[in-house]
Amino acid sequence: MFKKEGQKYNLISYTNDEDLTLKEVLLDKLNFSVRSLSKMKREQSVLVNGEFKKPSAKIKKGDLIEVKIEEDMANFEPQDLNLEVLYDDFDLIMVNKPPFMVVHPTKSHYDKTIANAVTDYIIKNNEKVKIRFVNRLDMNTSGLVIVAKNAYAHHTLSQDMSEDKVEKTYITVVKGLVLDNEGTINKPIYRQTEDSIKRVIDERGQISVTHYKVLERLNDATVLEVKLETGRTHQIRVHMESIGHGIIGDELYGHVDENLINRQALHAYSLEFEQPRTKEKLSFKANLPNDIKELIEKLR
Picture 1 (cartoon, helix red, strand yellow):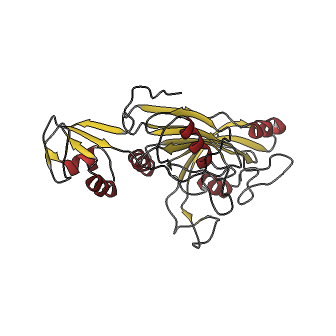
Picture 2: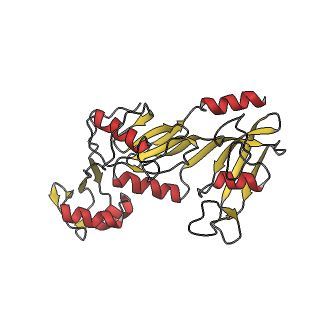
Picture 3: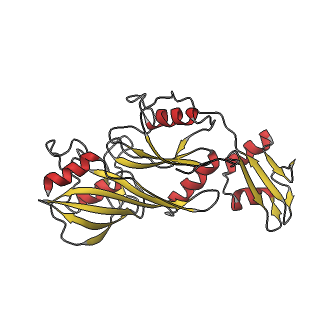
């Protein structure tokens, strides 16, 4: 796990390399949101060469810009849920979400969520950060979830997500034998009504692109590696159904057999992206959970 010793994780430092306004540096060079600028001005949390400056101030080449990013913690109840933390630095935490765990509290799942577990982890590490989720998984999907520790990291990573700069790979087990060794599904996904949970293939929908590769053919089932070019809600589940190979265990779109598995056989296996502050390339993998391993063994 990444260690934070010696890092000023509540301070972003940047040495300016051209003549700009402070606002231009904060927005274009450091990827802060417009909303953050007014907060910085109000709290006087941005310094140029050690002195507070307004966003309209002119900045010269060589000026040192420092932004304090301290925030109050969100009000999640800390709970020790034995959550697997794969990585931890001054901007983000990477966790391996088990199946059946919700990402954050809702009316129907008010505790025992990822948010509760991460809050417990943060407190035990004597940190005071406000967590935000960069990506989310359905309750019955397992795998990698990125938790940002500050608004800057969340904004930068969310922007990278929206621009498809984050490489997302899933492993799934679908019904039937997929004949082509690899392929691409390019079909728009549409939500018919605002209160509808289910998505459909419809020309009115958002562009959605899914790439798949066969890892193993089983007894009337196939293990696939799936890479998302876009990140729509239920994208893999909808696209697999659309080619006649619904995910095993998927109650909404797929093939349900409780003797095989009691949830959708879908796992967020790997993520690759740039660390928001250092721009270092980060790569993570989360091993398949036991229920999907057992499913594959049953179908071999």
